[in-house]
Image 1 (cartoon, rainbow, N blue to C red):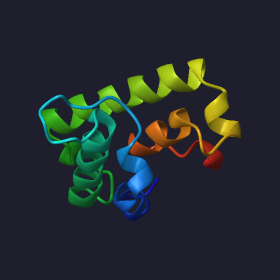
Image 2 (tube, helix red, strand yellow; image 1 turned 90 degrees about the horizontal axis):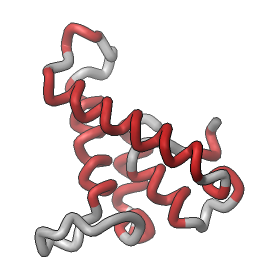
Image 3 (cartoon, rainbow, N blue to C red; image 1 turned 90 degrees about the vertical axis):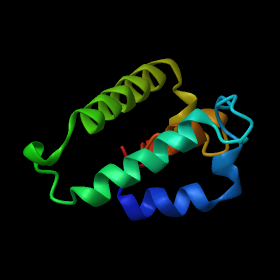
Length: 100
């Protein structure tokens, strides 16, 4: 997903109801927070130049890749049902299963 696509998705109510609550009283899910971090990374380095990422960016993107890889392997439903929590959660993490 592009930064703009992800930003638009995160504004929708359905993006806020999928995933595990952060547990800090904010009501935001871990995936929703991750999506905001992904947007920041994409916006600060739109050309995706490897030398422009800092360690924090790299650490977060490794977490994103691991999450998406794990959940895509476990959840075939995400590709078939755009109303499923799996699909919505993956989108929060920057992956639209309908695009692959």
